[in-house]
Length: 135
Image 1: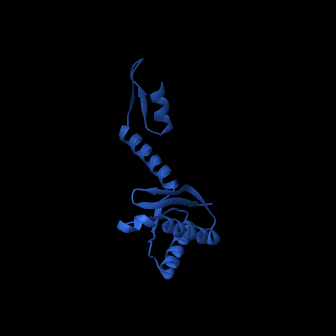
Image 2: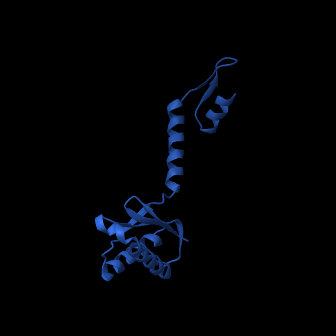
Image 3: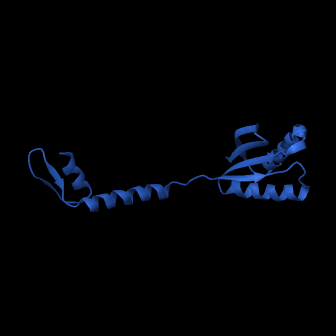
């Protein structure tokens, strides 16, 4: 019977009571061991976080360099990276400038770290964004 093989596999006592009835004697121990196995499997998996970098249309060169260093750090850790440039009010009229800032940031990032783009540069609501990940 399947119950008897499961109980032998986990080392808990199983006993056949009747022809079609089997019982696991130590059910709580069985559930505990199954839970521990699931926890071990979850511990082996590494969750990949999406880290974010937010640029601005009026960003200074120093601030851009700092964000670039932070982005390289995130990619070296193996995390995905979302780069955003929100546009507010009249900034929406200058999408070409925003796109050029994003493209130059990506080019600078590519020279410092190898990456691949998962989601290309696109407009989502009031911001430009893209998602990249390390190779």
